[in-house]
Length: 93
Image (tube, rainbow, N blue to C red; front, top):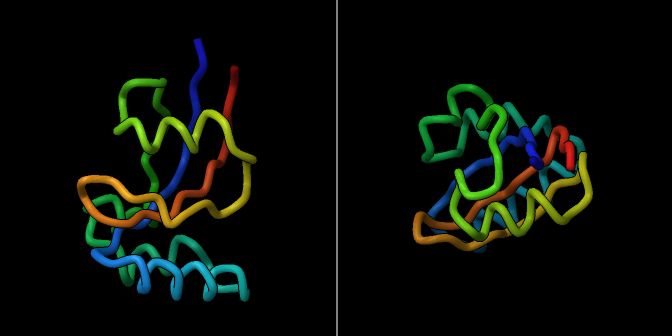
């Protein structure tokens, strides 16, 4: 069964999410940006979600984490919680 580990950050609006994505793409550390800006408790751990399997996170996460490129910043991903940036650290199919 597939499994992955990923980090994310959560903000309330799409524009903030896009601004933070640009900062990260320009060289800011994902974990530091998550600590500073994420409204999710995981932000204190640099956005680390640990290891999980399909179905353990919201469907919008699964779509990205189990289908998109590892090591790249993905998003904004909209869920019922807000707007996320995701970075997939590892994935096994």
